[in-house]
Image (cartoon, rainbow, N blue to C red; front, side, top):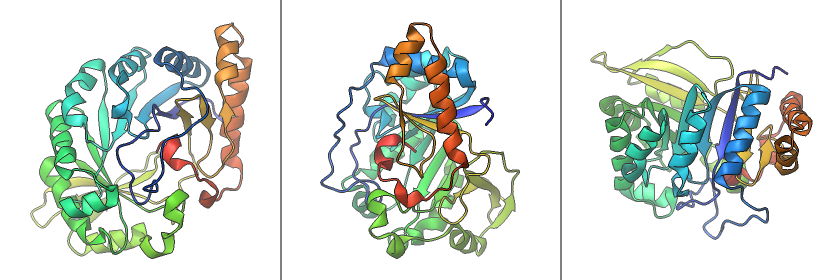
Length: 319
């Protein structure tokens, strides 16, 4: 496994204001027994990983990362490491008030979850989310140059699938990219997976009735198959399909996931993880071998047979 050009997903908190119907049960509360790493420890760990594997992309995730009060400091520290692509995935509820600080700290771009343009449906999916706050967050991200702004819509049959075309139009009108995500049979989503699942192929066919979709070049390791979409007036928007269930993107995968308590995950389809806190202590003392070994073992998991349904902790290990 090539230890260069790794894409790291760093989950900076497992807390979230939402309990989305495909992510957390409404009675689920944050609970982890492990001690959370301080910002300085997280930065040291990311810096050491950069020296070992050459991180080219870093995405800050959660939970909801904007609930972490010192997030701008973490962004600034990661920016100073020279990481080429520094992004954030958020539900957007607090983005309007934090976008300018994040941009000043060095954040490049954002992905924003937006599962509906209907306030009632949005509140139902998120169990209480305020659509107007997410829309304000999108506007703030655009205003302060956190581009491209990528909107992520988890499509569910009978819930929000009737909004697919409207969501693409919304993205085009606002200068955003749009990605349609398949539901995954993980955690609470597994309970009603057969009821809600709709494939990317079906979503594509629905859009093709209204729009012209032209395939774009695929970047090795990318989770999204992208198309340049034009409406009847020729106005373009980048549209992506993320298909972990019907078209797994394991081939060429170079992603690692790190949680705020120091757990390293090599594959979403495995429950096994590596506790990096002992490796962090060893590396701080001058011995990077345990850290290199853990990263190598995590990457080796990608070559093993996988089953997404095995994973039950998605809400806490980031996207």
